[in-house]
Length: 283
Image 1 (spheres, one colour):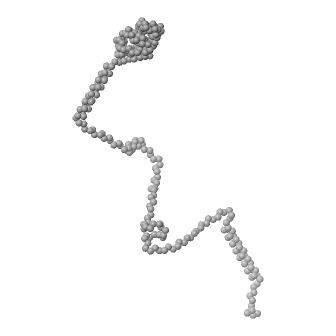
Image 2 (cartoon, one colour; image 1 turned 180 degrees about the vertical axis):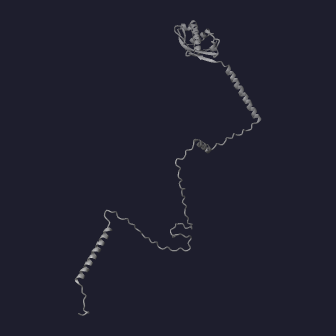
Image 3 (tube, helix red, strand yellow; image 1 turned 90 degrees about the vertical axis):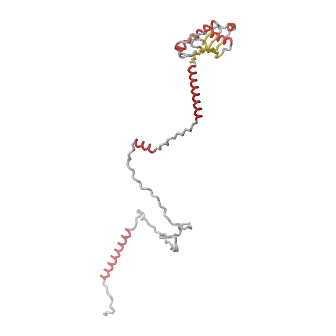
């Protein structure tokens, strides 16, 4: 057999070994690749993983400015609409002071200290200054003295008149004080007795009757000071008869000592009735 025409020869055992190795390698590769893909496959129940989008913006190249007024960290283009050259400045932001921790349960000030602080904080009123008296000349001073003397003289005169003024007492049928009511009862009894004895003949002949109010002022000795018809009867005969009866009954009894010390003039006001039976009644 020639060496130039020799053909490699492979045995059937070697072919089966190579085929087995190829199949084993392929199975291992499929197994490995299948497990790897299943591990990273997301399940339908899990939420999708968050994503982050990044946008890259390219800034066009800026032209270098010749003879720049100021230097800045970035471009000065679009930095305002003023045409004047303004120095850029940064506005300082005022920061609040850090809070101080409040003291827990601060002690309450005592009333004494609080009142003292209140007095110290209350502004004291300015002392009032009395206006300076205007100078008074001698003539004005004399006039004032004369006016004061005249006023003093007038006051003393009024006091003397008042002290000499009689003390008056007004009584009537409504008076209930015993000492005055007792004296008035005796006075009325005498007036009615004298009136019956001295009834006016003209009134009796004409059968006149009427009612009037009479006020009689009496001094302490019982004498009559004045007679006043407060309300006439409408018949002059009866009014004149009442005045005449009082004059005939006077003088009356003097005042008792308990009345005299308090009364200088007693005014007795009564209602007189001339009846159709020719009688006089005092109510």
